[in-house]
Image (cartoon, rainbow, N blue to C red; front, side):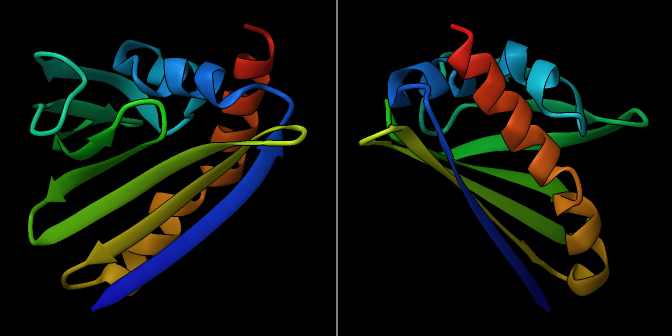
Length: 135
């Protein structure tokens, strides 16, 4: 089973300002209401792994599968037989930046879990952009 969701927003912030927040996992809880904290071992680079604690104290392993500094990162969370991939892309636009976050969930129950995983996406993207605009 697979669930897919994608959302794109524009912001007056620059891609650089959005990337500064994305590449600082210690700040993720400030803009993503589903995250309590993130601890990665090593630098924000492809292959870095650690732990993400989701709202409610749910602790899951997280791995940075792909990192294109200043532009894109793809992370993977493992929850039992479920695999959650979240692709984050930012690019400059005439008005500032365009931010796209795409999520896909695979495994048993993906169609049920997917909507729960992405429910806070609008709030998270709004808060991310507001923080980036304030930088």
